[in-house]
Image (cartoon, rainbow, N blue to C red; front, side, top):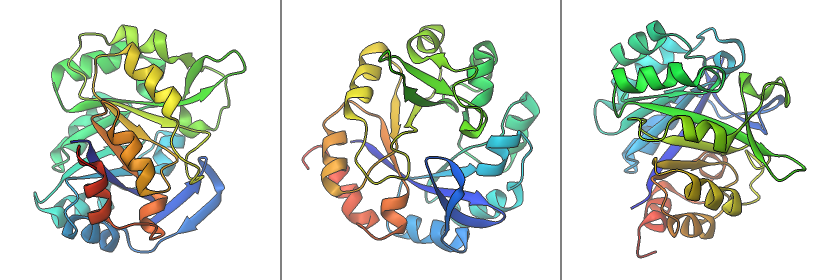
Length: 249
């Protein structure tokens, strides 16, 4: 079964959603603890929690909220988090809060060897986040720093994935930047290409708008799917999403 990861994006202590990572296109959804509690009560097996400001600056902003969220969940669901985690000390402090999995984004992109060393130190608990765009040449490239630096420093996904082949990386969290927050459907061709290029578990993110989107993703050999805007805007419930992610859906 494809695991469902409801997303809780944090900024200034609130639950928010951005469109294509643009801080100027933000919608607020209130108390993140209330939102997280509703997801867990509905049976979500995971929460995907992102410190948006930290993703851009590298400085943690939401650790206190993250700690309260882990306490609130109390083992009823697993917590995966990312945003601004760029040093071993960052992973140590987040794991100390009780987080189950950390996603390395910019750090993995700029220093793949660092991601490898972290995965070896915490096997099965460190994922790499590849937030990608497809260029005019048809090549998918990953961007870092909260997508604020454009294509500068972007690296081809194939190149990065080859560096982590056979390593104990928990998952590749693949986000289509073009589709993130757009509610226009996931990047099925891009995900298909990615799945052909790696044996690592892949968690898809970006663009899910309907239960049919989830059913289409469930037909791919994905480890999971992250859903944000469609859930918080009530396009479907967590219960309906779980059913759509089931193999028989």
